[in-house]
Length: 221
Length: 222
Image 1 (cartoon, rainbow over the protein chains, first blue to last red):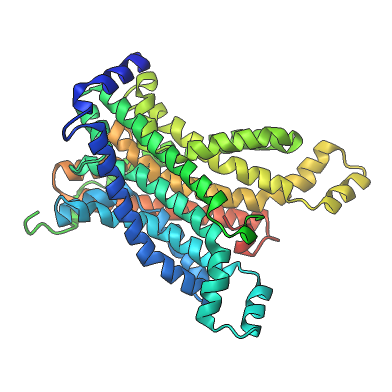
Image 2 (cartoon, chains in turn yellow, purple):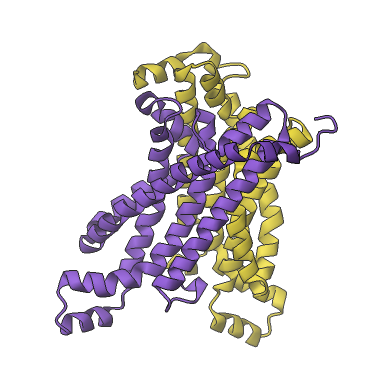
């Protein structure tokens, strides 16, 4: 029943330093899976969201779809995908993308839609074409919303990628699932702590990005 | 999965009672935490509007809480609450609900325009009557928006609890996966989605009844 002795058991185990079960390897597996899922979700959702937000079409539909997508349980999607498609990255990527894409879609759509209409009119007035207005006015304006969406999506995917271990893939969930299966609580707790640290670190990175990566004119917001 | 159909209907027909039991269990472990979260968020949110300095640190804490992966939290609690108990799943879900509801409560209570508050005071309302008659009703649309997010995510998160032995409908995912039998998984996904969407619809209806003036959805977008 002692948390700290469990954690020290976990972190001092020689298996945690080298080899396939080492912390470095599991963290990199976790990050690669998360990165792939986020990358795919960005490619799919952000351009569509920007376009829908700019034209103002289907915004209600986007919100409704996102609500519906949030209702889907990822653990169910992962297990079903593995039974249908077999163990592999694809089986886990599909549910993870399904988790992240709606968040990004709404962030992009609402971000662009929230652009000050006067600003858009002014940009049109000085002769910018529609693509230029979208790219030079609406996208910078939507950046804070996009970053917030990306942060939510990243944290959710990091948390949920843990589930990948349940269907036999790697990543930090390996520790949690293997530990649970063998009643090896030091391992389970160590894995859980690492996932928490990764999620919190991601939050902090995005908080920093939000402060420093934005055009000066937007920082006041 | 050789030639196995995605859904074998007879299995569903034979297990209706079982599925109903899991659905009820799921509703309890996912929705009771949202109610507890609301019961905590209201006084806490009130405290935060009266003592604004309290809000920043609390908001920071709950922002971190919201980022904690559910499975990790379930696991961390096991030594204290035991494997496969309701508490192991419901305590984290309560924290998530609170993390969503506290900011919406504070936003809602702060959304009352200053002239309205002054008008209430001028009519002779004391702080408590103003709270009950003016501030709380104005916060209802915000609260309802927060409740919808909290309830839907709680319902879908609760199924992860199945990995630590108590997940209501989530158990169907584990069961189906271990037996390489997709029917329970499909049934589980559909039932979780139906429960989430039905809860969402009820909350939407409640908002229309409680705050008929707030028709525009995006007025409170979150």
